[in-house]
Image (tube, rainbow, N blue to C red):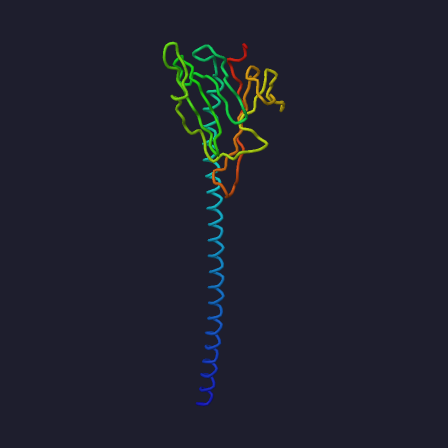
Length: 216
């Protein structure tokens, strides 16, 4: 009887050891699966954060450019004769545009200049002074329109169209620009909100018809 009990106890101990061994292996497997899941979740979170950051930057860039284009469009659309009675447009090129516009709505037309410099688009304003009024480059006040501009060899900042412009044609005025023929101005800006990183440069564009030149 005693021998039988010893055998049963030995069998039970052996079974417990086997069960403890399987339990350890199962624990290792569970830990490995759990670690893999944590790693996958962390990578997914990192990718999600990156995508959210890209979308946020793109939206910010879009908002900044929309505001800049809105200001430029409003000023150009309202171009008119200078305080001296000069033609509304002084000069025009692919990277700069100089005209007269009553930007503060006080009845006096300022000399306004938009121009590209390195990777920024700047705005210069000259108010006429003296009697008779005169414009002086020394009094020009400069401000930043937008930065991080990418210079394109195929898409100029400014493109000009004559009176035949209907909003669909791609044929623009040839260089050098005859300012007397300008009736519409297309503004195209390549901007990279985060140079060297995704999503890369984006093109923003709008076309403005100059109201006061319809009678010329």
